[in-house]
Length: 544
Image (cartoon, rainbow, N blue to C red; front, side, top):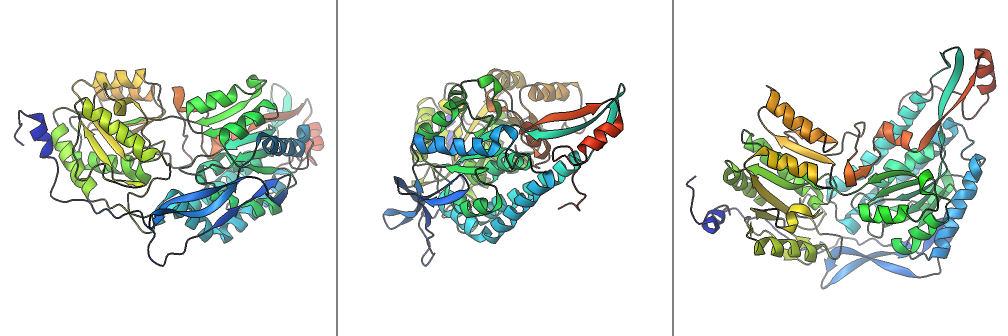
């Protein structure tokens, strides 16, 4: 490629003849619109009709000039929210409630019954995920199916973990088990309202805790569908749903001091605010998945075909609305032009439109997101960046085709802020230490992707880069996008990106506490534990 002196002229050559296919965010003709009536509550073991205030739930999909109404949700006040927390506290009953004193196998049976009932409503849950948060066919189905797989893996691991026999150290015999902590407050996100919520909810239940779950305001209808199943499968007060504005419901619950576990996915600012509400924050166990601005670092020796493919997937899957999305790509200056050229060409092959099918880009569920993305674009343009892809930033109401901004610099908001949407900033670097220093300085510390041909051969320099990335984040992906899976791998973060680790094994540890019975004689340990719900080993069952 011939280098052009005028950067604006150079950037214009990156737009390709192939333009992306973009459909408007409108409901297909004849498509049945669901309606989930959330004027009900699950508190203290009962699903009761709700006569208080409700709010309509709007789909990002339009019929004519109006967004489709797909249901409604109850709007709790602080009074009803506290009642839900008190119900969970009664079910826990300082560790003497029915649920915490059940054996592991009894709790597993209840959860397996729940799984069976959820599977019966799979089609309905997948459908409402598509209408409410606009996941395409494959992504919506995957969210449900992956959740069921996670539950089975959690059951298998917990059974295996709790089947250890009596051990002896220093003449002391003991049985060690994991026991519940108390009452969990669980707040799931809008982008994975089913999967990410269940990633902490189900392990907490398996371990004997009771739960207050705040239904997300966006993505909450999938949970409304499940209320009756929970009421049938669990003892009174073990699972309680709260709906409404977070600021009206969550602080009053935390202020009661009845919460022992806090599982939250959202911003670090919101997490800090809620944790400070607890009267004894030192005893609050936290599992937090927070802010992320994952980097894709394209080294000068990178295989551009691989780098482009992985960065496209990493930055556009579910419109970039993932904490693990690649949210800033930094490319060595010697190959930036070639990378941008290939990247824009690949992006143009993606289609955009309603979620019913296989469109890669779908409407955005957050009402203010298109405006925020435009603000980031305007800020970057004012500081010298340009949109370099065809139809980049083209907006049809709730649908926004991704903008590729180049060259993005530290003077621009898009370089620093987590956009959480279809906007792809690309920056240049000359010295890798510029990038490594940035990783060390920012408040984010989740993951990074490094694209290089030097990984297999190794060497001191690539090892230095690996170590710098590993000590600033919690996962270094080599020639691959940032991602959470597989669920058996630890999913964590440093700094303001996370507190605690989410994986099949680590969540079970996070929602429980080790307890043991010990004696100087093994027969005393074995005898007293033989009929214990806490210490008796689980029955041997085939893996699910």
